[in-house]
Length: 186
Image (cartoon, rainbow, N blue to C red):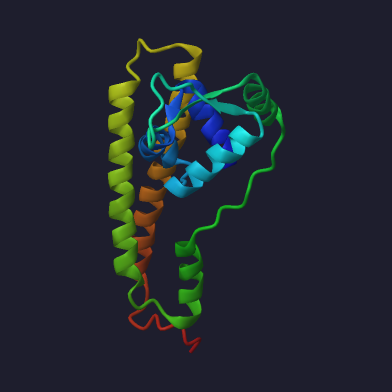
């Protein structure tokens, strides 16, 4: 996924200013595609220069007033092109998995505590996703748009469920490691 396409999606859902976009990213799209405020503002400028979006006319132009943007037909066409294009899955990269692999050769000092911390973070994220699901996707919300948005949320719920289960299993494994898990190969 690319940031310009995430921004086009958000603007098609609701024309917004850069500040409003960053807040929306923090509360929704940011769960699966993060971006800094600077990246969002930089991409807005590029999208406008490419003719994909435009700033909405202000009622009374004043210096420092925030600009709101909307998607132009070329932007909608680009998003539709990107959505329909085939993409290969990307390999999952997670430093914790690499650290576990490294622990096999250098030892596990400090790693178990961090696995516990990760477990707690994933449990909190899972609880947050479940609350969003309860609040935003009651059984009577069955439009195509709602079903697709819910599908994205379900991916988050399923991933967090996986991580909480896997991290719990990892902690069980740590409990069963021999007393000297120094990784010195002896």
